[in-house]
Image 1 (cartoon, rainbow, N blue to C red):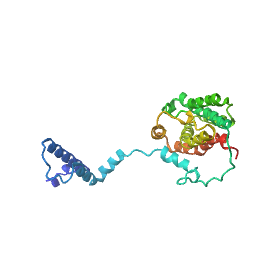
Image 2: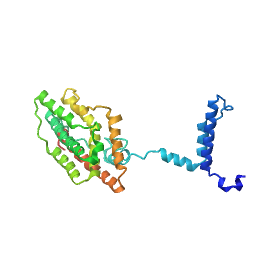
Image 3: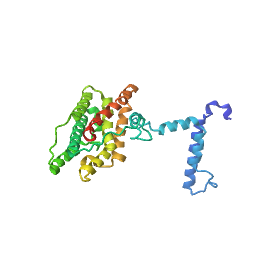
Image 4: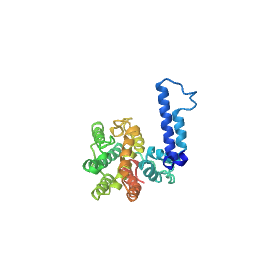
Length: 281
């Protein structure tokens, strides 16, 4: 009779949905009455999966609804960064030739202190901009802030070794001024690139630098600079990435490209502070 009633004919998707509903009702009724389901050859979920497979339209819709969009930070920003890593820095993904070893350099405590002072200056610039800029409010209280921790470490150097904090040197002054200029000119996509890469670098290679300096110069002491309240890898960084992804979701292609194009400059700015402890090149 359905063949003579076009208005009652069903599309594959509707038929699958009806089958799913019928199966689930049957399973619920059998369970409520404690009745066995004739050998139970297949579970309701299995039948439902088969029904969905018979309807490509319904399957594709469900997949689209459950799949999260790719992370801008973990795909495009990470990809741009890996293009700048050398093969000795990242053997599997580095795309630049391995660096030629440079002349050995043995930094002293004064050199390391200068690095910490310059780092504090740049972190303080980032954190002050975030604190006063409403559009950057999602980046506040990330748990990754470092300026206060660095102040404790600088004070410890003076108390422990009699080394008063030096003035901020040119690398720190120049990079902080560049970050401030981006803010003044409203170049927020560029700012986000510098912000994320500077904080991320400290949690990655920065920790190795800290361990090396600690063993060589501080008797193994772990500075506050390298300590976080919470798990930086499993919690703090993923949370910040999520906030950046949420911001980038509203960007058009031109804005995303502007952020990615700043990757090399962000590496150069952050890397300039290392001149205090890696020596002249």
